[in-house]
Image (cartoon, rainbow, N blue to C red):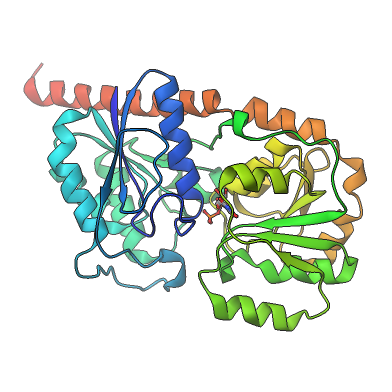
Length: 365
Ligand code: UDP
């Protein structure tokens, strides 16, 4: 297949602004190339492309969907990079068999009927606004099988969740080194934004007095400063936003990854990355992480929003085996495993489309 990947408009690939979508797109590109498919990528200007065939598109970045309320209208800035990327997609579509949309944005869903090529939409977050639910729902209705999600918990946030294709996720295991030994330190990894609830991990660090190494961009500096002021005694160590090869090296040295999302995390790439390094995951029993972590085997699942629960779980890290963590990543989240799931999804979309076209051309048969 010839597959065109269209990235998120909230930031260039490699910037961190796009959150987990950046890594997901990178890994899907690699996985499809590995399986012999021809892949192109369209992404905002300044992107670091994982393969040669990348096209950079200029324009104003989109505001992230997490920070808006349920009733938020659909907005586009002037000279929108989202608009410009989809103009580029329209112009290039005849060179591809299928397009994958990675943007959690209204426009690509709305444009779907006007494209000659089928569009597969990989939805990266749970339900956030009524306007997005409406357009994704229409796409599910009119183009069955084309909407993919990462976890059942994410799907369940949508009314039409049972008609979404669950693809889980995957990564390039060769880029993650298993580390059998850990320092006496915990890790927290992700965008430092309110929906990620870092304050609970910091509160747990303050109580246990185990150092918390923090990795990620700070899109909301005021929020970060508030949290730091709240816990002046917490042993925290902010290490910045690191590229994957450095992140996995540092993450691998930690005794556990702590995940404290307030929202239904669609998947939680960082959980899969930690396991790949042999690092167990302590996470709230909510959203994607609750489907990734094997409670008592590759981590501990904790009552949501309970700092006491985090502290109790951190005290029981010795019971978990780091080899088993790596084995889970190898069994479930390899590039090969994910590539197989994505390839089958795209093949099904193409087969359904051909069947639909045949039915239209032979209406009475
Ligand atoms: N990340 C990174 N460097 C860092 C911290 C985070 O590359 O220093 C990446 C991490 O690899 C992951 C993403 O940021 O892919 C966070 O994705 P996740 O799915 O956990 O959450 P999201 O941001 O999509 O809500």
